[in-house]
Amino acid sequence: MTTLAPRQPRVVLYEGSGAEPFAGAERAELVAAFLDRGYSVTLAHEGAAAATDEATFVVVGRFAGQAPLVTAAEATVAVHDCSGRTPAEVIGRVDGARGNRPLNAPGTGDSWKPWFPVIDPVRCTNCMQCLSFCLFDVYGVDADHRLRVENPSNCKVNCPACSRVCPEVAIMFPKYHAGPIDGAPVSQTDVGREKMKVDISALLGGDIYARLKERSAEAKNRFSRERSADQALAERRRCLTKLADAAAIPREVLDALPSPEEILRKSAEAAKRAAAALAGQAAAEAMGPAASSPSA
Amino acid sequence: MTGSEAQPPEPTVRMLYCRCAFAQVVPADVKSAVLEGLAAAGRGFEGVSDLCDMAARRDPHLADLARLAKEGTTLRIAACWPRAVRGLFHLADSPLGETGVEILNMRTLSAERVLAGMLDGDTSAVAESAAARDDATAEQAAASRIATLGKLPPTTPLGETP
Image 1 (cartoon, each protein chain N blue to C red):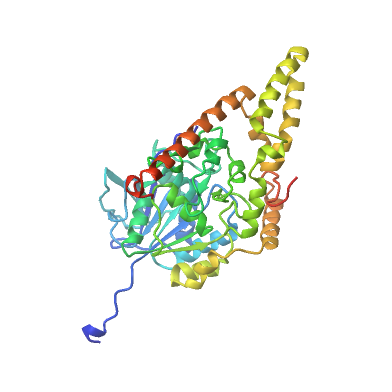
Image 2 (image 1 turned 90 degrees about the vertical axis):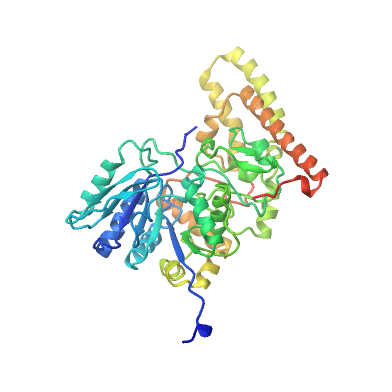
């Protein structure tokens, strides 16, 4: 699990009073470079202080030697006068000013690709099928027993499997390559197609967890006979190929799944949480609208 | 012009540009041209490296933007599908209101259309942003992008049962 800081650090490019504007191409080059490094950027034409927020750590401008003092919500912000500096030099100075502030920088080895399910609140019926399905505790429920994406960074990058179990086509992955999972409008045809796919277990010829249990027992026998890690892995790959193809799950995600026993344990936990949420919803409905707080 | 003829003041506009820097789903030429157009316009705007990343953090700035839009500021967002953008704000506990928000879809629109919506308030570009492409075009575009980039894993196209 990746621990996420509340905000990415912000750079303010200031062109208001007391600063000369950047040249057009240079302005675009700087903004693009900062965004591609993971920073947020504000191009400000009004007061420099007004453009800052708690995430702002540096204000950059062509101040001609008269760099102002800028105080943001929590701390004095570094101000860099970049008069006469090339964009590469400006970027270098900003990177230096960041110090040890955490930055999720795209394309770097330890970066986290923001891949996680996004619920369409208009379509979601809080049926909790996704909560039951997910083995990685991505989903949870709020105080009103409604579904929420609780731990986005637990999600397995490039795996859209839970979106394929949603009967309402309410789960999006904005970085997916095709609609409606990418957030494109949902057509009636999509709803029909997705409903055919709801029961992934059916694609495996029965209840998925019962099958896993069987496989677990079979595997124990097989391991005791063969004791071959390679054969066990080959068998696991063969069994999971069907599921991978049906739900567009990347092979590396399947390979990283825990043991069948652990899958069963996690699925039982998830099912329990889903059942509790559904019971909570039912109880709230039984008590009438006054008992349930308004949803977001 | 007399006081009684005075027009109500133009609503303040706040522009937000998403770079979608962690993925290749927004065409690179479109997002670069949109950024160049915004930068050349001589107006202030905000850029974020990745709106998904912000939402995952439940960045409080998203709540600020949603609040401003509810208070009368027009919030224009250049990002991806409006349904996804609204879902991201919702995930961040900062749902957008029905009005005051104009989302421009860089996955489907040309840079010119996105800039017309962002800078000129062209509402037809906003409407186009939420319109579905026909399936064949969408699948073709997706397949072409995958073939070009070779970075996404093979998947079963929607609607095809293995």
